[in-house]
Image (tube, rainbow, N blue to C red; front, side, top):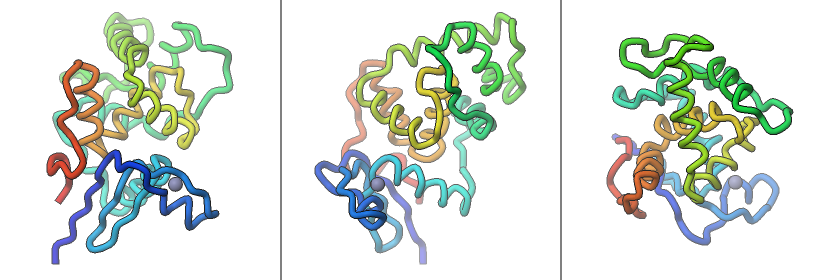
Length: 197
Ligand SMILES: [Zn+2]
């Protein structure tokens, strides 16, 4: 028998089964996870946690064409939130170079060298992207950072967030990328796209 795993986004006004069974908290669910015949409605934190189990059990299945997914995944464990003042650009860049690897094809996965033009250019693009996040992605990103213990103000945290989403919820990552390009989001409830079989 073949079992399909699918996560459907943005279910409205449903309570998270994870929070409910843990301590009876009625948290609004944003995801529905279907695993074979069973189904759970989950908040972002619980879907992150649940997907961790699945990733541990099944591997990440990273899509090859997503540079940042690989670059970020390799450094996913490297950082925790620093209890710092508002990070300056210098601090942000230093943290970025420490946590994120080179995304250029020829240098894929190699460490970025602090002080190089290439490192600064890659960081700068991602920093601008973080500054321009649409509200929906920012809300998800901040919840994810809280669950993962990362500082949402640091550019590297957002690169890791996108990498995590590409690896685990590619349909949502695609919707984030499309939203930033100003296109309407094509992924509605029950969209057949982006689901693992
Ligand atoms: Zn929950």
